[in-house]
Image (cartoon, rainbow, N blue to C red; front, side, top):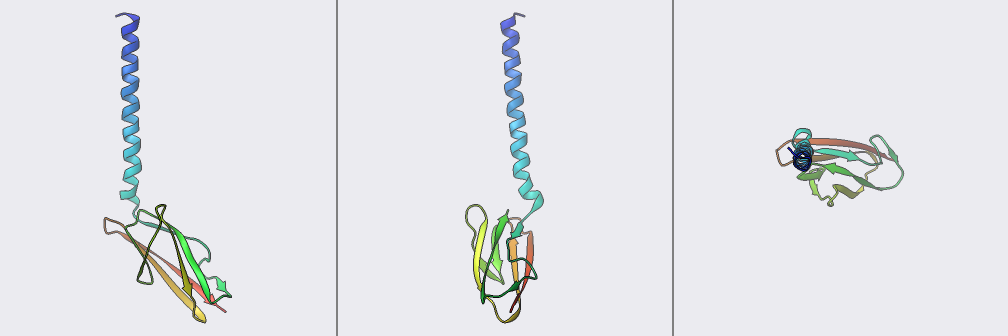
Length: 117
């Protein structure tokens, strides 16, 4: 076999290897959505915070969700999964429950307890 044919074979197998590794990497990235389910990351104010204003902003980031609700009221996210809702606090103890579900029916929830003084 000539040097030229050997080089062609090496290039062929390198291209095939790159294709296979790319396919496996992409499949792994997509499968994580199925394996890990919906996720909610709440930004400050955090659970148990003492608030001195009558309103507060509940915000955060979601991953792998289909629907999101705050106290059973549907809220919306942007393309990156960010959400932001202005909430009116009643004097004393306030509870906010964020619920998220994915397209496979799995759900998660985060409870935020705030105190307005």
